[in-house]
Length: 441
Image (tube, rainbow, N blue to C red; front, side, top):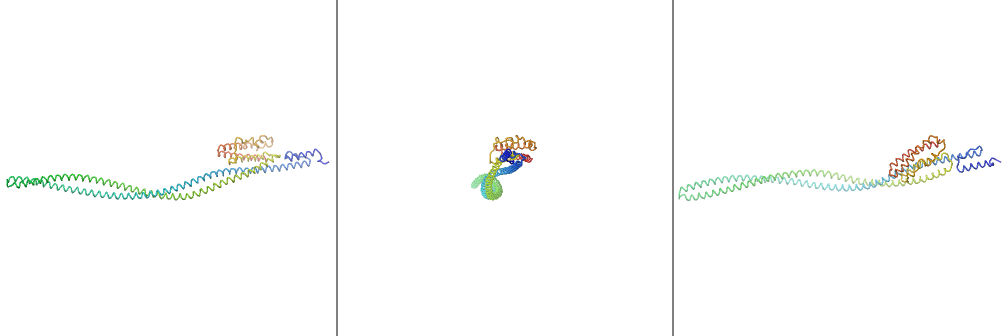
């Protein structure tokens, strides 16, 4: 009977095969028996293959989740660009409307400036005409004043003549008196002469009264003419002042006209520029609208990529789950790398708006798979490894930063959430490094 026929050995081989079927490769012990040794070598080969498959799947998971993390961050950035682009597009539309309104107002202002220029030009011409009219009035007043002064001189000459007449009347009255005396001496012979002398005396007295009246009238006339001359001089002064005021106003109107012409020219330039800006802003608005559409399309495209990668992540998780049923050395150490990247991916998806995280429900560094393995590990070879001791701090920091990031994000503090996500990413570098050192010991 050969060796396989021995009942005890056959039972051992059967047990070993059951272990292989169950994936308990590390539970298969070596045997001095050739068949048992071959089965042991088969178990080692299968373990090596399973471990290699685990390493490949974990590496694929790490790379895929790293890509998802980066893509999720891109998704957040693209979503923000999409939001801002639509806001800018709306603002651009408002800007176009504002530019059109300003251009229309500028055209109206330019037209008003042109009307003001015409009005100022008319006012300037009216001022010039008023100045010329006032100068004519001034000359007329000066001429009238000269004539009144000539009339005063003539009245003075009349007065002189009246004085001569009065002197003649006095002399005539004296001669009449003498004639009366001589007629009285002549007696009857001088009666006729006395009558004539009396008439001459009466005439002289009438002449004297007439000259007195004439003198009084001339005096009144000279007083009135003096008042007229004074009034005309005052009128001439007022006319001169009016001419100066109107002349100054005309100069001011000329200055205003020059300024209005300058403003009108500039308003026309502004209107022309705004018309050009109107067209340019329209092109900008159209371009921004196109960018907004592209940003929305990019958001959908990135979302589709993340959906596909989520499907791949599910396949990877299924593969890891199947390998978990097999006995593989440092299985938790390797899988922890995938878990760690999934944790970072969830944080990235949170800020990308693809998932929601409750900070009170997130696991800490003790309750996750790596934490449970770390706290329960009895293998002294691993516990005494320097990387094992160093692993605790960055692992704790990753979870603490992630929980704080979720809390801040739920409080609408996006900048704070991004800050703590970056802290989690920085700490994760140490976690991955020490996990690799433990796995490659």
